[in-house]
Length: 332
Image 1 (cartoon, one colour):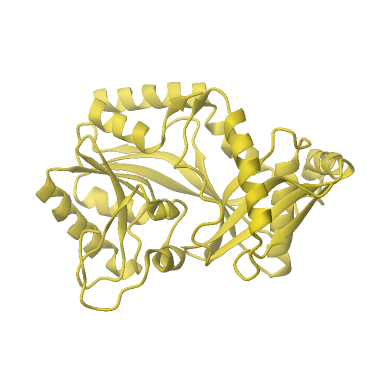
Image 2 (cartoon, helix red, strand yellow):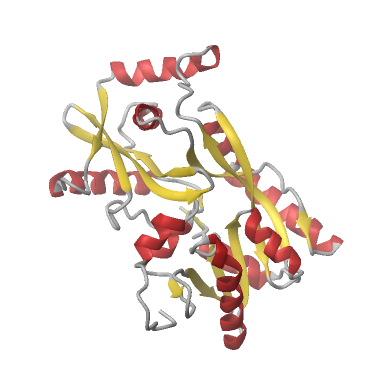
């Protein structure tokens, strides 16, 4: 931690749950450093890679302090000789960046749906109903695990094993925020467990977040390689049903990569062309847009733009490598 403050401050978990966006939970990973500024109850989580300080998401604080915290972090990084890269930030920080002549690239949308719209019941839900009927007939059942108030060490161990099996089965080019931390930082979390014949076969994790009027984020979803097809879909439907019964009207599915890059500001024509070419290649090889297509069947009602922000208007190999390292780009 970069500062020791003399006034009461909230814990990182409290701040992430109170003010965090779709990727702010990454700041709780032990591999990330945390910056705090005097007089502000907030934080910025970051990784330093090749003299680039890479931040995932907007500053985590009361919105009235966003600019002050970002400015303090800019000064801190300048004093250390680091250039800043913000990844997966919202329009708020995009405006901040444009005012300071940073380079910005629109690369994804924040995907949101209304749980009150049951995706099973209309004409468009025909294929989804077929998939759900298949997995239900296979004997899969989903229940909410109350791990914060009634922890079950045996169940959590079973889920950890299934997660390991899922990770080991993944093939090809991989990109992810970090290793799943399934039962860490329990306040503000919910879990939906898929079971078959008394054995865990999958898990969905949901976090409390704060983005406009959206306060629920599905952040982890996986099932065993041996689980029946469409187990993930059944867990999603179960989580949506729980939110529907609680009269929740907006849930976030996370980041949906664009098929091609959107708006680019602050880069010359050559850099724009290079950025679009690299993204097009990576998106094609990794089928990035398929994630967005997967969530569309749950009736998206909002798609807000997300950006990459570069303090330097020159995007070189160092910046690209820093992003690849931050997102754990690898080949299995």
